[in-house]
Amino acid sequence: MDIRFVLYGLFGWCAETVWTAAYDFFSKSQRAPGVVAGRIPLVGAERWRLSGRTYLWMFLVYGIGGLLFERMQSSMSQFAWSAPGSWAGAWIVRGLMWTMAIYALEGAAGIALRKITGSCPWDYSYAKWHVAGVIRLDYIPVWFFLAILFERFHALFVAIEPAIRTWP
Image 1 (cartoon, rainbow, N blue to C red):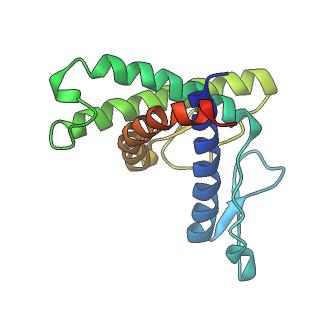
Image 2 (cartoon, rainbow, N blue to C red):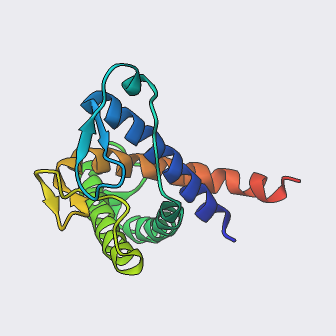
Image 3 (cartoon, one colour):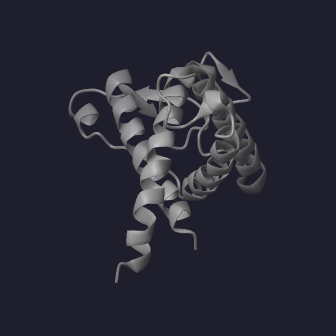
């Protein structure tokens, strides 16, 4: 199995767990158990539990997505404006391209999971700016930031891969 597939899957799981815990804390609500769409209020000590969550399916989505984005980054790097090491260059263009790619992956994964399992693990139908319940347009800043961060994690994962492969 590709080591970076595992690293992307684990990174995605961890990031999603932290995101959902922080989101619930600051929004003072959580996804309602057993309810397809909607959120219920969190009060008092419930908020301080910082209970994050993810789905087993997401390991595959993050792992495959990371490998696909590596190929995209490889293709983008042939253009001088998109060099991953260039923070001063057109990072806005790169961030927007990454954001569109993330939305494409999120939408495709959400629709595929809905067909395979009968529901999408995340349901944004309650949100004002959702697309088909599987994409939230108000998350553009979040995905933009994570997309630029992805370039750094990709470089880190490539650098540590040899050490992981030789680890007993």
